[in-house]
Length: 501
Image (cartoon, rainbow, N blue to C red; front, side):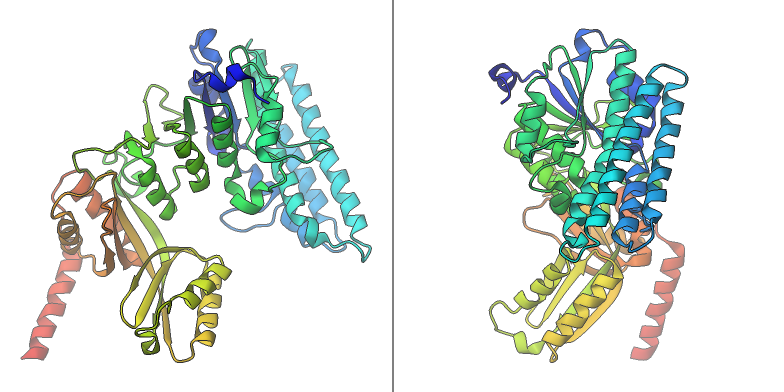
């Protein structure tokens, strides 16, 4: 158990550093970990670190392209040992990173020895499992999730151990808080694992560097996928009663994507609510994993999103007490590629629960609904998922409802979000801005809680819609009318008038 003093001490903060930031070792050291901090300022902090950028892709699979990593090669192997070569490749790349970080310092030998132990220990374990499953009594499929977690843990352990070595070389009393369960004989819950590792750490005089992955009986990856490190971060903050939780990213939580509206146009949000964070998550722009945010919110721990490369900037604080009196649009974001699944079925008119069978299909194929529409005889879901999953859903819906007409098409979803956007006329103003920009609406939603507006538009109009709404609602500038779109609309209007005549 954590000591009573640690439980009641609210003077420490818990930080998470993402993989992209971790790769910028010097910036992390200068801007986050050490910098110009005094002896006292170095402690009362816990850092939860992700693997260096790209290593989880090599160990599992490429998140964007799907290219097989060690795990996918192992899971799909029958007689070949391609996964072993891939694991060797990971080891070599880790040692290359070590050499870049430590140079010819004595810590290099320790760092490489650590990599060797973890990689070869994992290799031995996987070979034994492969041999065991060559007998008919044991099925590899039953162990694959454990294999996936074991491989993923190598990346976080590597970066956390390196960070500890770097800090010690600078005279900081850093400790390696290994939550990965490496060679632990007994299973443990997530909370139990965290409590056991932290029970002997004195946060007032030791700087804990914890792995983003925590081995536990619940199976983090089976529940949270690759977002597990934020859950680990959240639970550490809650169990140690942190005064603040801080995520260090390579960018600010800004009013829009600077790659779309321009770096000069965006502004850091500054402060917002966990309600807004939920809406961002629904749009695929997670400030923090929804289940991680839940724990922080329930324990009244504020979350700060800070920019790794701007240490003097306060960033954006998210808490459950932000309820601004003045209405303000905080962010314009969305889903650039989504799908509309429209089910037209006149037989469902007046039938209670007519949507349930459709929801069950979406749930079965793990297709999340971003937003939806329904009227007397039509249910339309706007979903974000791969086309392959969409097709499976449509096939099953058509099989269950042969009397229905099911149509799909690609769309985009743009959302205007703020802790308080209850200003009169905002919806009409937003629609007018989109119309002036030549963006045609497919559907729109203005929920009664006045936290977000949602607009479904053609996929090709996503950037145009974001730019126009940000310009009009955040920057306070008059939207620029799109000449090409306007001329096309004028031509269409003229044709309609001729037809009417």
